[in-house]
Image (cartoon, rainbow, N blue to C red; front, top):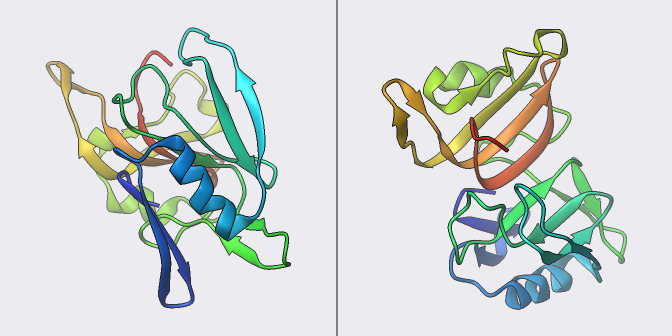
Length: 175
């Protein structure tokens, strides 16, 4: 998963690609359904950081939908809190970052690879050891001098273990 697309592969072969920018949600759901099987849907009401929408999910927490209020219009949002999704025909589809990390893996390699401008360590909750890292940066706008809001595909970890992969989204935001 990158900030701009999902690449669906079987071994070394690309099965399908979904552009996260400009692809209608129905087309993305159709492609994922072909690979992962039938999804379930849920209607989400608008909230402080969420647009009203229907989101589609596979497995327990792997989902695609329209973005939060800080994500560009015309962009889909994809995320997972699971290492892999079991398909209806018994396969297991692993969901990875561009460098092969998945939920449950150590965040240390990513933490070492990126500088502080694309990280948020949630300093207000040091006992939880939370860390978000944008691993595929699309932009890094400066809000105030020295205060960046990186935007792209990211991981969220707790106590050194990746807990979710999300993208595209903005970290260090009010949401």
